[in-house]
Amino acid sequence: MLKEERQKIILNEVLLHNRILLGDLSDLLNVSIDTVRRDVKELDAMHKLKKVHGGAVSLGFNVSPYVEQDIYLQKQKVEIANKAVKFLHNDQVILLSGGTTILELVNKIPSKLNLTIFTPSLPVAVKLTAFPNIEVIFIGGKLSKEAQITVGGNTIKTLSQIKVDLCFLGTGYIDSEFGLSELDWEVVQVKKAMMEASKKTILLTISQKINSTQRFKICDISAIDTLITELDPSSDFLKPFITQNIHVL
Image 1 (spheres, rainbow, N blue to C red):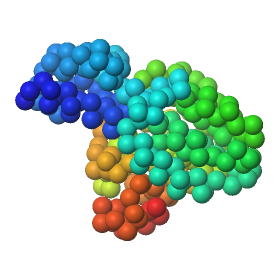
Image 2 (cartoon, rainbow, N blue to C red; image 1 turned 60 degrees about the vertical axis):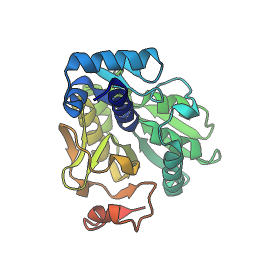
Image 3 (cartoon, rainbow, N blue to C red; image 1 turned 90 degrees about the vertical axis):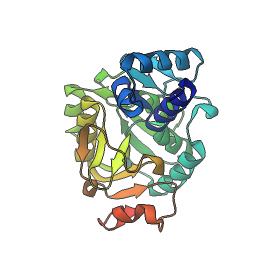
């Protein structure tokens, strides 16, 4: 495989999942980790992704105000956000995870809506400060620089003390049989705690992430109440979820 082909695949994986490990890329491309590391370093130098310890993250996955062209499949994520925002009503208590799709949901929140929003996501918390009628409660803890959410005992303890109306959850990997999964064990524990802290969980994901898995499982797919993608709910691609009595939008 030519270097250009490898780098195109690497960039697509990083854009799709926001963060990827060198080892996973090595397995996917069937090349050495040293080769993948050089490719990632070159892509970083070209400002197409950001190299981090052990892997890479997408440019759209950061705390500072993002540029629209840095958001992978932004049109689809906006469509998901348009569906998801209809679940929000005055005086709800909401829990938001991190990720670019969740950030698009924040963009769609009506300015007059009164909400209390808990989040362990630093980018989400910062973006919510622009809303005068939203009480923002940032769930503190150890900050995962790669995932950009707080993790660890303090975060999980805080989540154990609340029961919110809705949790809007983003995910890196979703499969109708294996369920939800992530590559970071600490992030998995936080997402599990978020679901426990919520009366209902609404999963937001672009359809390209469907049929993908990672090493650490969050939950069975049946633990999700609602799945929102950019696809029409009648799409055959979503039937494996509908047959498990998940509300699909």
